[in-house]
Amino acid sequence: NWGISQEVKENSVILKSGNIVPYGVCVWSTGNKELDFVKDLNLKLDRGRIVVDNCLRVLGQDSVYAMGDCARMQDLPLAMLAQVANQQGKFLGKCLNKDK
Image (cartoon, rainbow, N blue to C red; front, side, top):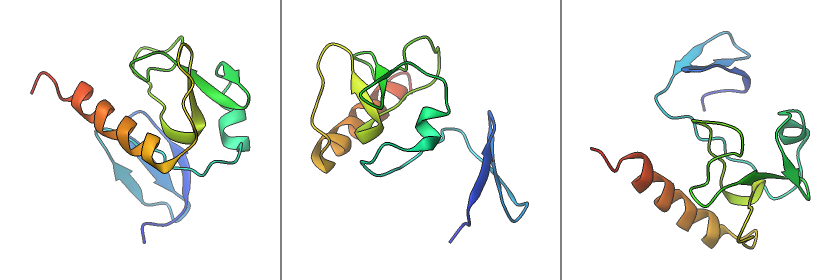
């Protein structure tokens, strides 16, 4: 159990305990309910979900991606199902590691 996150920075997550967890890629996993966290990000939303392009990149952001229940593809909205999130995770993993 890592604890409860308080703040997400560019390369680390600060926990409420004060511990700092460094990362290369941060994956935020949430449920299928619209969250205040998502609303407070000030990103383009459609039906409470973050709008992404066909590469799961958040519209208007260079290196920010969203997938699963919190994301809605602009051109091809997909169902809010675990299977879709799993497929998107594999797809995004391959995209982010294609040069390695």
